Length: 347
Image 1 (tube, rainbow, N blue to C red):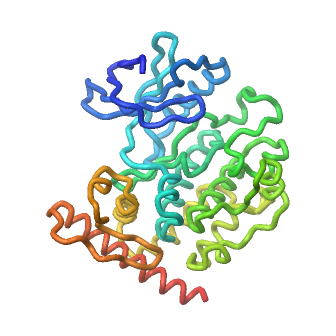
Image 2: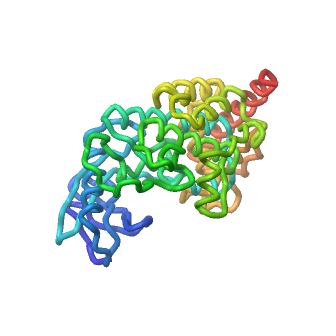
Image 3: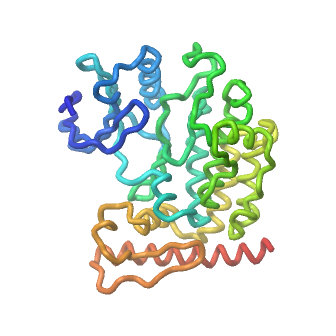
C-alpha cells in the first residue's frame, strides 16, 4: 500500500476490493473519526472514462442527504491519484449475510427493502439512476443501519454518454430486460434490480438462473417468473406481491416509483415487526451470522434468528451483552409471532 495518508485521513488497512477499486479504513485525525477511503487499485492506470466515473460518484454522494446513503466527506487528488473519502460503515454487505446463512427472515427483508427503496427515491429525485443495485452494494451496520453504496456507475440521463453505445452497465444477474435489449436505464431499471435482490434475500436464490451469460439473459428476457411463495412459502402474500411487481418484464407494470415501493415495504415491515425496532432486529441478524467482531470472538452465538424460531441464549452474558440480547430475543419472538399470524391470514 503506497499511500499512507489522504488529506487529513491516515490509512489503517484494506477492507475490500473489487473491479478496479480498493477501499481502505482510515482515521481522520482532525475530526477524530473513522472513515472509508476508496481509490483505484495500486498499479492500475485508469482511463479518462473511469476517472470521470469516480469523480461523478463523489459528486453524486455530495449532493444527496439520506440516512441510507453514504455521506461523502472529501474528494482528494494526490500524486496523480483520486481518492473518495466517505463515512465508515462498521458492518457487512448483504452478499456476506446471504453467504453466511442463506435467506433472511422476512421481516428483515421488508425492513431492508424499505430503506433501500427510499434511498433510491432520493437518487432518482436528483435525476440519477443507480444502475448497479445488488446485495454486495448494500451494507448493514452493527447499529442496524442500511447503506446503499457504489454510485460510481450512477448516470444522469441528460449527461454525456460515458459507456460505449449499447454496453450493458451493471452486474448481469441484476440487469433489467430493457437494458439487455440496449435501452437506456431508467428508475424502473433500478426497481427491477431491487426486486431481484429482494427475491434473493427472501428465497436464498435469484429468480433467474443461467450457466452462461446467454442463458441468463434469455431467462431474464423471456422466462416466466417463479412466484416468490413457490420458492419461499413463508413469505407473506403482501410482501411477495410487492417483490413480484418489481419484476414485471414491462417497466410500465412495475412500481411507479421507488418511493411507492418503499411505502409498501415499510407497511409490510411494520406488520411483521409488530412494534420491535427495525434497527435492533437488523443488528441482531448481523451478530447472529457472525459478521461483527464481537460475534466472531464468541464461540457460542448469542442469538439465532431464523424465519420462525429463536434459540436459547448463552449462559452468563455481560450486562452490556444482556441488554442487546434482550432486544434481540424480544425482536425475534415478535417477528416469529407476526410471521405465523400473517401466514395464517394469507393462507
